[in-house]
Length: 314
Image (cartoon, rainbow, N blue to C red):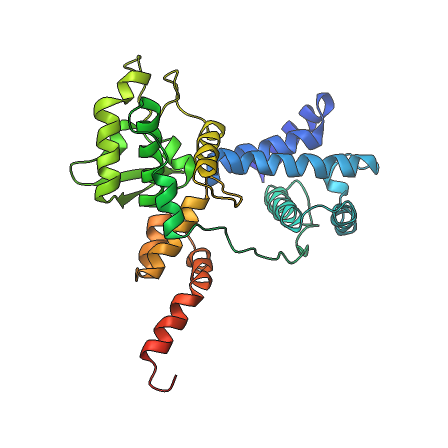
């Protein structure tokens, strides 16, 4: 009770000088970071969603979250639908609002949670874009191994397809995360880590890069990033995107390929070749197996072939 009174007094003093709603959002983001250990991307997403919601509420004369009712939040959802926001964006905003107002309620800032009964719109899940095994082979053959850039790029592409790791995980890899002697890499995400094995083609590409090329780019011995740009700085996501798009064009791949395409392709090809879904889930780093199960639906042709060959009454 005393703690609540102190918090209330602090909020009152700060609200006299600053925007109360802005303060509450900032404190919520701090809570997510320190207590929930959320990623930076998640925090940016929450902050962006809540800022848009706050602007909508202020335009309607609401200057304190204590005055927000379920009707206003439903009005905001209707506004997003009228403005043709993507269903996925609206669903994310609803999730942000629910988490935020639940936090305010638990902190004693509001006495009733106005977002408790909010329902997000149904989102039509699109099957992820994948490459065939032939297309992957063609893509991986594009980097020219007689140039430092080509050797580096070949190592990155081989690593992504060999492990199914996220592009962000690859770009955050440190030298110490790679063990070529025993053939594995360690991925780090939100204070969690997982070990992923790598095959011989990837191991050879990584060895070639480390033994002949990385030192060409990296002049500063204190730089520990595995992959860098030509200036010796850690490579950015945008930088890798350009690399990938260039090789996709060279390979004649006409589809909309993204840095995540090799991750999707890895998952489907593993399942097609008999990997069990739990192992694929672990390698991909999915906390919920239902996320991994999306890839099972993309294996229909394989299942049909197995059925026709094995069922006694096909």
